[in-house]
Amino acid sequence: MFGGSFNPVHNGHIMLAQAFTEKLDLDKILIVPSYISPHKAGDSTVTPLQRLEMCRAAFSDIRKAEVSDIEIKRKGQSYTYLTLEELSVIYSGAELFLITGADMFMTIDKWKNPELIFRRAVICGVPRNEDNIEALEKQAEQLRSLGARTEILDAGIVTVSSTMIREMVRTGKDISRLVPEAVAAYIKKNRLYTD
Image (tube, rainbow, N blue to C red; front, side, top):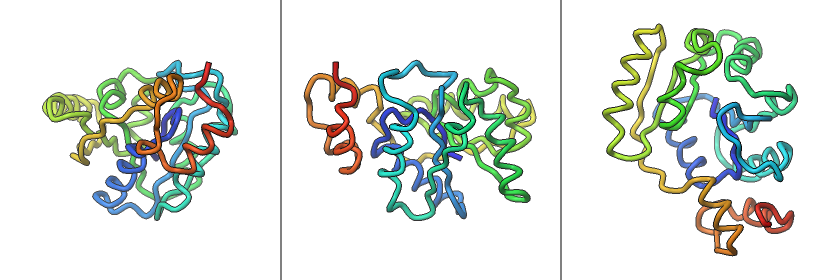
């Protein structure tokens, strides 16, 4: 499971999904856009359905990737422990992995019901830059002491962020190198992230 607000989804998300799929030899990677993220304010002018549609466009040709509307259908705050609970029923007997960026990995023990998250999935983190690999390793040790199974994967540095893309769109800059073509077209057609 690779969850997030994906507001908007970008090439860095796709690169991470592919890297984790390959390095962990996953059968499938579920891209799960949140309905309302407990961690991010984001841009309230873009609806959960629009973010879901952008994810579907971005991952349509990516091998082993499937976009799930599980959190959007559930509505309300998108708590990871609830999603993992549902996925453990849907994929009964499967080993689940929770893929997170560095920021989320560093705070996951403060999330709602972290012990239930640790019970259901291997917690995977990827460093944002070379400077925080050591911090992630230290956090992984801390999480293991709380009963979590962890994986730190150096999947390459992702220098693009959704915040940066929203700002670029707002100021009229070209985002075509940072997002899939279908996502850039969707943003333009629906006039997302503009004042």
